[in-house]
Picture (cartoon, helix red, strand yellow):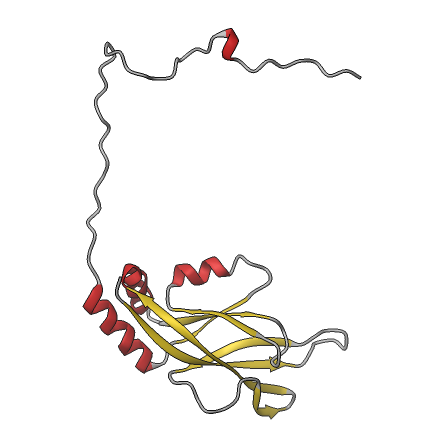
Length: 176
């Protein structure tokens, strides 16, 4: 199966807590089309308590079997990269996955232990994904399945429509 691997850097913003008991909020805000030389877990800027962090880099894999999903993402009007994070502190956060498959990103969103954000896709990544889709996409026509005709007089190994007494589940009363 043809695939392309892109290495992307991840940026996140940490906002101060709303109350003094809250941990604050760390959310992915962007991806970099190339891995910078900056060390992971580096604070890039801090303005009025809002910090921008470089979390590190991760490989994003484009599979030829998912080109229909990638095409849906590109045609959406706002191509996105789904960034999946585990953890709430910039120093200890784990980048679980980067994907441009919107259905995979939606699947990660059901896990309450993960933070999933759809961030804008950089123009160079849009070009790479569009070229990959153009090169590997194969349109699969929809084929409706038809029922097979059944001969009611044929002797086939089918389950009986009415179970015999020996095959039924016997419900015995519980002792109290």
